[in-house]
Image (tube, rainbow, N blue to C red; front, side, top):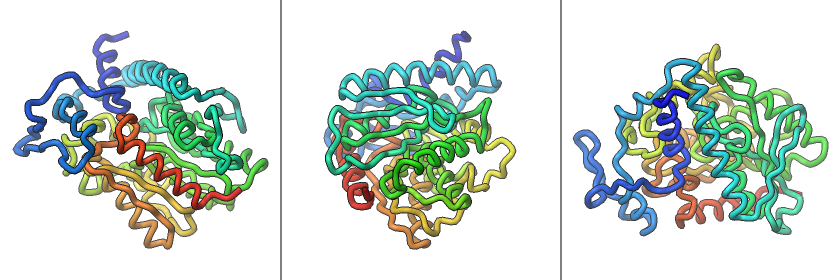
Length: 355
C-alpha cells in the first residue's frame, strides 16, 4: 500500500473518529487561525476545555492536501480507515457488554446491536441506525460505533444498516438499501415503534430516506435523530465558512468532505433531495431531535434543517453545544457533553415512540 495514503487514512480516521486528544499541546490553549485567535471555550465543561487544550489548531491547507485524487487512492484510504474504525467498534462493544451480530434483511447487510439489558420502556422499540462517514467510509463493523453507544446508553435494541456506498455504489443505492430494510421491518412492527437516525452523512441519509418513504406512501418512523446532519452538498450556510479551520474534525469543506459527497451524488443535481435533503418537502416529517456544536462546520446545516422543519409544522428539538466540533459527542464520548446528549436523545425518543 502507498505509504502516503496510509498516512492519509490514519489522519482522516483521527479527524472523524478521534479516539483521543492529540498529544501536541498548544500553549495556553489558544488557536491561531489565519488572522484570528480562538481561546478554549470558557462555557464548555472542564473536561472538554482540557481536551481542547491538548489539541493543536487545525491546518486547513495541510488537511485539504490529503484528499485522494484517484479511485485507487480513495479505495486505499477507505480500507485503512475502515480497518481502524472496526477495531474501535469491537473494543467499544466489549467495554459496554453490547452484542453485535451480522444478519441480512431485504437482501441488505445489517447488524443487530443489543445491550446487556434493555430498558423495559424500550422493550417494544427499535432504533434503526444509519452510520456517518461522508458516504464513503465505515462499512461493515466500522459503521457500528455510534449504534453500540446508543444501545449501551439508551438500553435500546439497535439495527444498524450497512448500506452500499461509493466508489462502487453512488446514490441512490444507499437510499434503496434503507427502503428495502424498512419495508421488511414494517412487516413485523409498527412504524411508530421505530426511531431512525444517525450522525453526519447518517443524518443526511435519514432525511433523504424519509423523503423517499413519503414518495412510496410508507408509514414514517415514530421519531428521527439527526446528529449534525450533512444536508447540502453545495457550499451553503455561514458555518461552512466561519468554522473553517475551527472545526477540529472536518477542518474544511473543500477537501475530503466535498469531494466524497460529489462522488456520492455522481449524476444527480447537487440540490436533488436524495443527495441534499434540505431541498425536499418536510411536511409530515416525524418529531426530530437535532444536535450540533458552535465549532461545527455543519452547524448551519443543522440550523437550516431545524428552521425548515419548524416552518413545515414538524416537532423539532435543536440542541447546540458550546465548543463542540463536528460529532464531538461521538469522538470524545467520555465527556459530560456526550452523556448529556444521549440522555436528551433518550428522553426525546421515550416521549414520541409508541409500542
